[in-house]
Image (cartoon, rainbow, N blue to C red):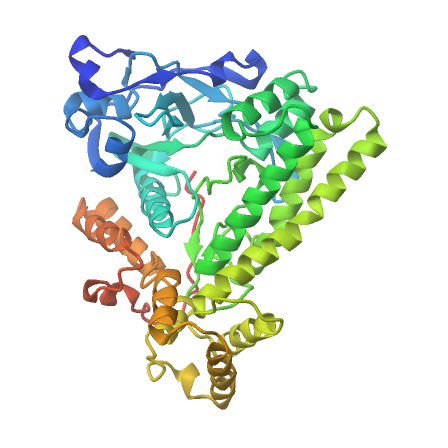
Length: 493
């Protein structure tokens, strides 16, 4: 039976509010987590806990594991499952938190408000035919990738802990169960708005929009059309986010509208992975058979998702539907320029360019084209350019690259910054390492099959400082051995 924590746990540092629970009841269902048999804490994020104002010592105790397994409810928490809809591979479905429970919002020592969610916490009214549970492997993947993304400087939900449940799940095979404690600016999604606007007949839409503005965009001028401003601000954040994904070769894998956060954070790490050889058509997800969410399609899908967000806001934008549609289209038309500007700025930094020239775009496209033609590793190519190690890859032996390099060096020569400044900019813009897919799999398999978490701990350690370019990171930058089978990822539901 789920119960409240005893007075001995007060020192944990929980400081909950439950503002989402004050929205219309149609947007959520109160739902306690389903207790598990024998929770065991296997990975804990000490630095994140401290930033949240939580006691690492208390949370790493047996009582703390009980909390992060959902067996005990912290004082002040009000567990609920959020309702939302979503276009999944282009098809609209009624969804909701089918295996996640929001405990509440932690107010940090700096006054920041963040969601604390248990992922894999059991059935909810939105589970449909699912069991509401999560397997250890996918929860480890989310922990590893989300923390790597944070270290790379990309807006993301974060992972506080993973707890083994002591229970097995039946998927294709029997798998160990686990629960992830996820921390997010919020879990408001494009799909939340689709639910409020369409499935919920719009009853909670205005309340949801006002809540979003207050929580994420408090600077919005209330004298203006606040809802068109909301749309524009979300577009800006997504243009920035997707550009950063592209700059590090990250492929989300399942960019459904329910997996796009209004806050601008990366959310829902399912079949995600990082690209090795540069190719815009790269797909890893086993279910993305047509490449809808391929690396090169991510900016296009982002604006498609944002169009669905805009549709959900139409009734708030203007009483005249035609005028509302025009306002939405005008706002959406800004995405491409915003994304393009962010991407070019990031690419200039990766190439050590401090100023702008008209031909920079063709210089960037030229390099990417050569990389694609020769199957060059995305991350390692930029790392080699950073340290003038152009003898390390076959790409650099080609005449095409020599011609491109001459253009690049001439471009660098037309700016006033020193070689040392150029290299420093490139060092801070080109990571030494990313969560290589084979390294992530190695860590997951060691834990799932052998109960060995040391492989994951070492991986997390080197990923925590991706721009350090330390000798210890060299082995983690190495490419995997060639395989006869393409790498695939799975949703892990």
